[in-house]
Amino acid sequence: MDSISLNLSERTQICAFINRTEFYWTNPVSEALYRSTSGMGKPTMYGIIEQKMKEKFGISLMDYSVYNLSDIRNSKLEDEAVIIVASLCRVYVDARLPVGMESDISGLEMEEKINDILDRANIHIHITSEGIKKIDEDFQTELAQKFQILGSNNQAEIDFNKWSTSYPIAILFFDVDNFKTLNTRYTESVVDEHILIPLQKLISEIVKERGGAYSFGGDEFIIILKNVNPEETMAFSERLQKKISNTKFCLRKDIISLTISIGCALYPNNGHTYTEVLDKANLAENRAKKKGKNCIILTQ
Image (cartoon, rainbow, N blue to C red; front, side, top):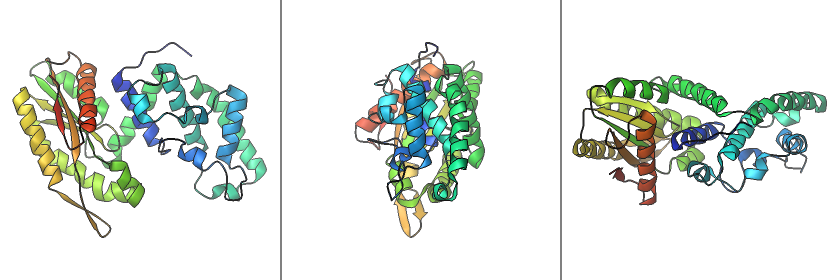
């Protein structure tokens, strides 16, 4: 594997990609490993692939199951290992079958599918940082097209570069507190329809002509504000936080209120490129989470 170096923004994008694979990367095992055996203890295709990956490449997803997304985001896992984890998740995406299909596929068909996956796995496992960027570009495009409400992270960088030639710029990086609990309780499709779609419309309405709003991950968002100072950035963030917390969302028969954690950083005060300022906003958002969530942190 080529020697690589990942910045915080790239690590965050990789975390978003791993989340997108729907393996819900939480200690101690992923969804793929959770379904590695059927109810009768018979190995499923996931279990067989896990074993064959270990045999063929000397690594498997289980080797990294003690790590979670926070470890990846906060550099507890080395750069090369992060790439391997993302690559392995990509392999399992190729392997994904609808729940229950394992019992409907013959042993020969399963073997052929596994061999095909392993042939392609060699490319994924030795993926370079350029490959990860391509994966992320595909992800961001898909994300922007999913609801067609907010822009993509790629569009955010384009807009930042355009606006920063004329104005001071603020980047707000924020996400929904305890969002995964909603997905687990109500299912992703229900949350998409009744939370993410109206929430994205609300964010778009709040921003209006002040700048731009973008999806960064399932529940992670970016707002770019044009021509603002630190005081104006905090005032806008407080209005955004209040507006979202005062909005009621209906999930089945439940009425849900949301809170958000926001990290803010400014150009040129906190960085001279989109990535530098975004990284600072991301770090500030992490501090807001650690402070107890439902919080705003402005980079000094």
